[in-house]
Amino acid sequence: MTSNSEKLQRHAGIDRLFHWATAVVLTLLLLTSLLPILGVRFAWYGVHWVAGLILTVLILLHIVRALFWQRPGSMLLGAADFSSRGAGKYTLAQKLMHLGWTLAVLVAIVTGLLLLRKAGVSFMTRDPYAFSLPAWGVLTLLHDLSALLSVFLVLVHVYFAILPEKRAYLRAMVSGFISRRDLAAEHDVQRVERGE
Amino acid sequence: MNLLRFGHDAYGERVLNGVSWDLLLPVAFWAGVAVIVGHLIYRALRRGKSGRAHDQ
Image 1 (cartoon, each protein chain N blue to C red):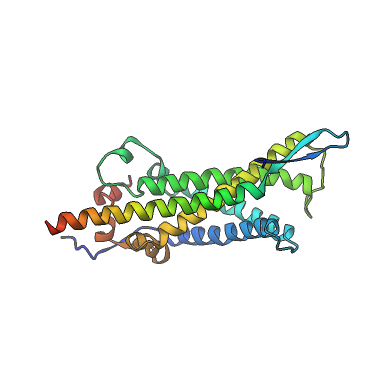
Image 2 (cartoon, chains in turn purple, cyan):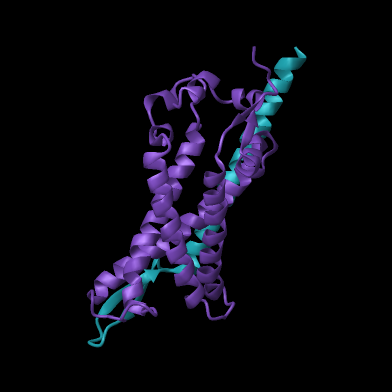
């Protein structure tokens, strides 16, 4: 016999830690890159590249954890996401948000690591001739576009997180648990329990 | 207004420097705001419709 108020684990502690650490680091990265553009002058570069390296480590750990300890298939888009059935662990909107973040963060990391070569950091010799000027331009363009996509995603992500009808997801990202009733509002609990 | 920023190399050739922040930063911000406002309107209409159905 199952009760509607029964608490189901949605996120393990390590995944919540990853989520909030990523949120802090991404906020730092956006502030250190966009505030100077908005006219707030400070020594942003040191904080920016250190935060970028921390983000890189966090994402690598997340990928390893997702591939070997979790079910990466539960985050992939499939035909079932467009049917009227209840969602699996993640709704279509949540999968699209994850896809958006994947694109923004991976492009930012790859281009950011390459741009470190141009700007120079304490552990890497500066080499502005590693790529041609047009190639540096394209890398900077892609890095900029990932920042713009991140601005858009932060707004939409925070909005949906604080909506009253979606707040159970926010509570789950804090406590790790969601009630069966809240989960059943948009999910097929049996699919979730099967790991879909 | 340009979508991209350009500079010049040592030979005076035009080279790409990145996106035009003046144009695209407000676009990214207002696109996010547009999605939020769009969803709030959709949410209000859906609630109005389900409220009317509940009254009948």
